[in-house]
Length: 437
Figure 1: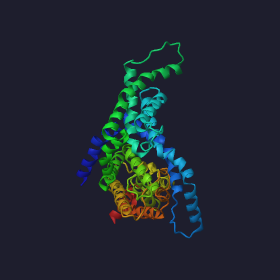
Figure 2: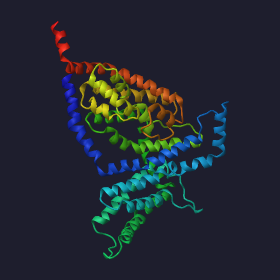
Figure 3: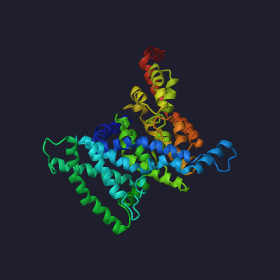
Figure 4: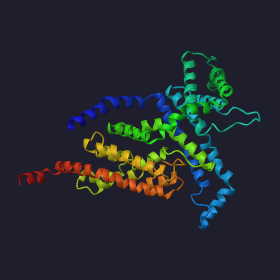
């Protein structure tokens, strides 16, 4: 058994870790990840207003407060949803600009000018002016996320290509820097209208759809596959293998999954506002509040066990970790136990979130709990975050309690083994006396 463990740890340390390390530091991956993070405040506020516009009460409720909220939401729906329309409704606009900005700064270029070019380019292909002088917004939300990523990268790489080869309008040194910066974008703007714009027109004429809709059609099989239980479990497994090797797996896996999470969220929100059944499950709050409760590894249950441990080391780690763990910060327990590269805790650290993901997926698929409709700050305590993200579905909070209990049972036998190992190190004399007796 020890030989198998050494082989597994060797693969993680020598193969997976180097690849993950290079991937996490790759400039385009970092730009996409940081771009999504930059857009998060807009998405949280917009999601909150969407929940407020759709009260978690039945129209037949006899509670006076519920009836008042339902009447207010119906009467002032357009007013309440305006913040949502200007945030979640056009989230791809923020993402396109943010990705371009972060990628440009990694090249030591002017991030602001790159973001402006990306914003213009995205609007050219995603919201061309119609015959009635209106800008369509259907592709500015979740439908346009993949296009926003591609446009943000393409426009920045275009600027970088031209800058490295000194292609542009060269003004004298006496020209003020701000004027020079504006002229630096003239050639890139022309290049966009000679490349992206013709491509957008071709897609419209040939297929009768905008470029974001065409790209979304290409990605649709991947998006659908990413919303299945096998895809969820594979993501959880990769994340926790990286964590076990000492690499922040949530940053790497979450960065890759953000596009799918936001796409699924956008679809759910469109279905909610249209009064249709919600279809997607795998969205970031599902990961945060149902799978990794208390942090990666679903360590909330483990911290609870630590608090009652006979080992002084584990008790101290439990006391230090309890409050951060409530807010989904579990580095103290992961590195203080340690869980990283600890063969005794390897199996439950991987198994607990896999079991949580399976149970939560089944519960959501069978409509025992509602689907996610809003983004919630990741530091929100899990029961509150689960209820909030599902439109204040109280059943989601109860599910979290059940999942914590299940993960505690999974950790328990391995915790006892590890506790005995530490007790032998902390007070070896009683152990020796027991053996002599």
